[in-house]
Image (cartoon, rainbow, N blue to C red; front, side, top):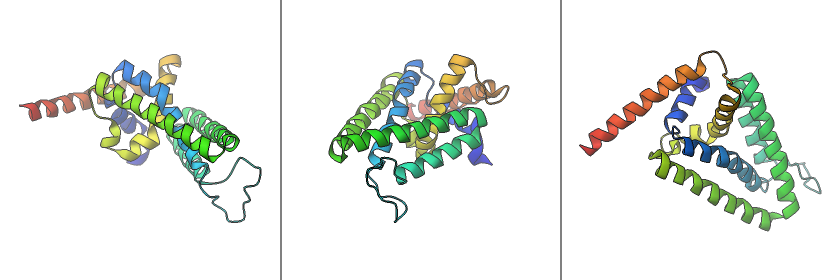
Length: 193
């Protein structure tokens, strides 16, 4: 199924993230965006009517639901890296729940919004100044939001450990990325001419 074609999704992502500084910016800011989003979602109502909020800080709400969806999606893509990404998602959910509960709604929301502003600004600077290309979210919103944390993790695993979901993955993705970038540059030149 095309929806679960990791190679295709990663090539799409890679075509928008080929500049090393932009990649570093994304490595630094994508997971904090997820964390601060979960801080904001902490204040959504519980999914189950009889769940009492009380003193507990882990609430089965929309933050939990998104964590489960992201985690399952990542594991389906790749068992090893996806399991690590799922673990990281749950750590973010628990951590953001704890921080939000400890700070209270007013402070937590303010801190989360500042975090979102800083991280998104950094990403737009990465695209505008270094990549010189609009972010992927303008062409595929779901792919950009759902897949970005997983792709950043795959970038780090590949760079640091040489990890590949399967042999030849990165060579095929690189060829597709190069082709996508070439097509984008040709379209850009036609618009200029």
